[in-house]
Length: 126
Image (cartoon, rainbow, N blue to C red; front, side, top):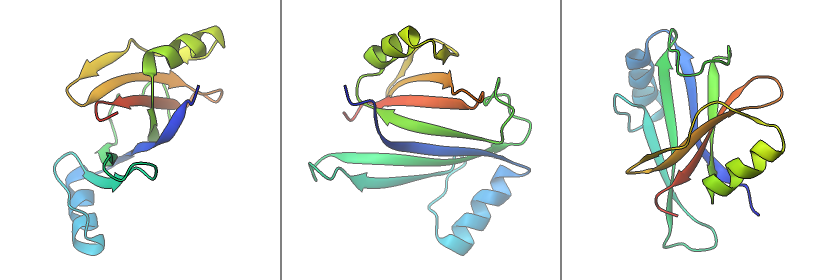
């Protein structure tokens, strides 16, 4: 089973997400929204298939990364989230929450061996 297919996003804490969005927009040309920026790309094996990588600054006091104490969280794209979560449970990986489904895909959070929170995402576009 192929587990991770790519990086779906990079999330990080900052003092002022609005100012960070504006800085990246002005200096680096990011097409930012209040939620960050989306980078669209095409699958190598099927150029008709689109993918997104999300870039999101969060307020420095966000609890979204908890229980991790790190200032960042990486989102990895996966093919079959439910099957992967079953495998991870068997491997005694800490599953932080239940799989949630939204219009743009399924999500769950896990912890790595150092307690870094990781978001796994099965995009709806797959």
